[in-house]
Length: 77
Image (tube, rainbow, N blue to C red; front, side):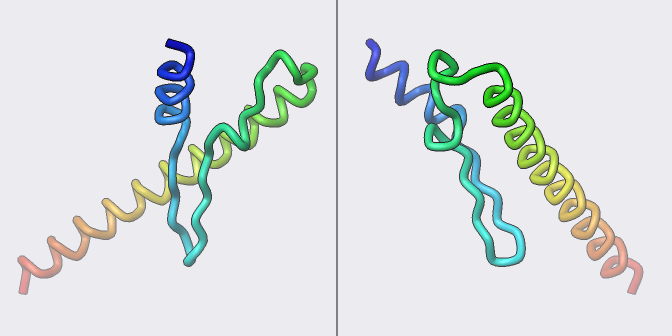
């Protein structure tokens, strides 16, 4: 059960982002067990995760808008 939970947690926390030929992976290596972290370390890790997630979401939104813009310009020709 513990091994399953660990795999599931890792699956849920793993997120890849490709931007300018860089790949950023958020996984267990970045998120340590909070039992071994003080409050400042925990806050720092959460800020890093939030920054990566918001960057990923912004990039995704920009790509979607660019795709729709291209689609609209192609249909107006």
